[in-house]
Image 1 (cartoon, rainbow, N blue to C red):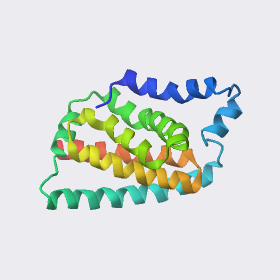
Image 2 (cartoon, rainbow, N blue to C red; image 1 turned 180 degrees about the vertical axis):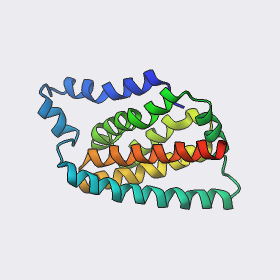
Image 3 (tube, one colour; image 1 turned 60 degrees about the vertical axis):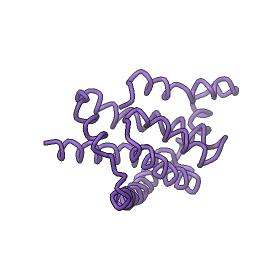
Image 4 (tube, helix red, strand yellow; image 1 turned 30 degrees about the vertical axis):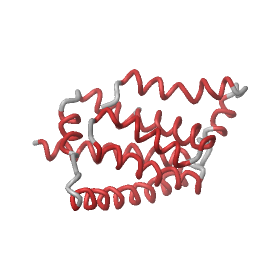
Length: 175
């Protein structure tokens, strides 16, 4: 699982990079990172995105099982070994940090695919090939939705809900 300091570094990175690009005011940050969307619109977008992510997760699980390549047990072991505080960070802070950097900043500069490759590489710390594959494809779905709606709030909310769901599932199967 990601080290908390790294999550906070990823959180600060888009702001530092925007600062270097000459953005200085809070409204400039919000606009540049696509955080300036109405909350009701973001909730609807998040619900749609979460549903797409869930369907993709099921499809990927079935495909990896059919190929006998599902090593998600490693992810379950990593999740089980984490403290409640770190699991909280994985649900409440990491999605915000990751979406700010990968969608709000990086994707606008390098595109959906390269941002998704880098996002997947970030998830290597689980030691699971299926986690890297899932992170890549989920990132592509989030990236496509972000490109379509330009609403980072929806991406953050869907990502946080997705992390909460997968952690709950991992803890349930671990019991």
